[in-house]
Amino acid sequence: MSTPVKKPWAILLCKFSDDTNDPATTTIRDLATQWRASASPEFIAGNLNNTWDTDDRTILELYQYFFTPAGIFTHNVTNYFYANSHGLIDVSGNKVFPITLDITMAEGAALAQTPGGKAYQDMMFQKAKKVLKDVYNVDWKNFYAVAVSFQSADYGAQGGLNYDGGPGVFMDIRYVKNNGAGAWAHEMGHGFGLGHSKTDGQLISPCSGGAPDDYTDPYDIMSFACDQYSPDPNYGLKGPGMNAWNMRNMQGLDESRVWKSSTTNSFSYRITLYPLHMPGSPGYLAAEIPGIWGNSNYLVEFRVPKIWDEGIYWPGVIVHRFENGSSYIMTGTRGQKILRVGDVFERGHGPLSRVKVISIDDVNLSAEIMLCYSPYPVSNARVKIHFAGEALYGTCDPGKPVAGLPSTFNFKISNLICDLGYQVIWSVSGASPVSGQLNSAMEFSIVTPNPFIDVTVSITVIFEDGTTAYDAYSFNSIPAQFAQWKYFICNLLKERLKPHPWWEWDPAAIREIFNEYSPEERRHIEQATERLFGAIRKIEGGRK
Image 1 (cartoon, rainbow, N blue to C red):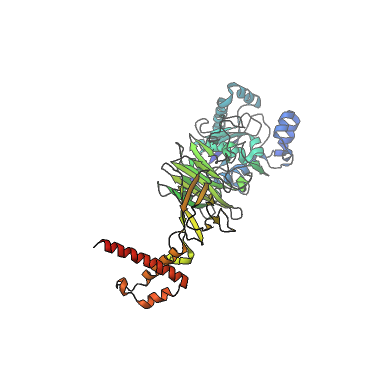
Image 2: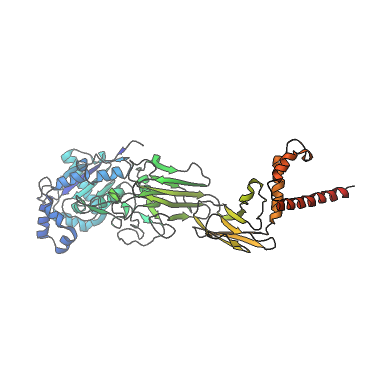
């Protein structure tokens, strides 16, 4: 694994000049009491819950626990980015600086209206950074990014790459207390260069505030608050985790734990994935397969409802691509965004990329998946029926079904690019199946009729992608007498005393073979042999 990159944030805990609350002594419960006495019912209902009334942490303690290693045993942002970057992004150098601005609350409210928006936020960044320099003699450029967070209710909740010249987040205390690493990991993700997560092909979002297709990946933090977050006792909410493509984009994916094919040609592999955010697991944490139709490569990950992903309903496999700063979750063949056992993601018809979930182990937290790719146009698979031979005759099998005996058939599939699951359906005309067998088995046996009856054995193979393949094997059986003669000749050839010619074969060996047959079988062999030699004599006579 690569060496972690230190990317500390300066957390500027701001208050206006006429705010009498000291962050080192004022508790969250004190704030709740003040707000309940002065704020509107709508504000109270939308921002205060019962936990505010019993929270004895000071404002400064809340920020220290949430942003720095002081809260190492809680679900704070330090732990979030460590787990969701495979330890490659280190924000443990975060520092909290209480800041008193040189403007009053009323003046701040006026500026929030005019100029308002991003201009207002940049102005607050500039004022807070000036205090950071003047009071603490600290240059904000010593940090990767800056967060400006008011201890009073302020205006806006955004993150990005450019707040007064650098990455930053603008979000007040309510988002620390109520939304925790759900909201803050999202906005800090913007500070690390991530866009809102999206869904491939989905143009309408249930959440507002971004582009029409934003916030549509329920399994990624960059879709807050339309993702599957979970409650947290210390900071209100947490998670979910970050998908593999977003981790890669912010240089937080351990590429040594990503399965990658060693060839650009066709491949089909079964591999085991372990949870993306549990790097202590023994194997691959993600897999990469080629993108189709101009897509980036796809990253395949396994997620389980644990820790940051506790809000995810069940374990499953997820596929993403990346484009223009945003990840896109890819849907399966049934439109599902998370793949369970038997589910398939597939794109293209050649080139083609395909993922199938073979199994999920809920105890050992692993998923077996099938990865398949072909750069060539894909044609339908073909099936061919083969006569399996008559077991009675062993290595001297006559090569065709014998009248009166059970005959067994099997099949081979060719041109199968991916290891597709399938089911088979056997049928027969002109003969009867052997009693008790299934017509969906890998072999099919019939009771072979006499040679005058035309027989056709057929098979239909139905693949899991909906395609089918068909083959038929038509024949007339051979009489048992002819099969016995061929069996006799085969055994004679096996007993031949090389290099002697056939007329010098050992008579005792021939008698031993011949004595294995019944009198009736010997008569059939004698008659067949006489006919054979009669035909040879005619051929030889014609050559005189």
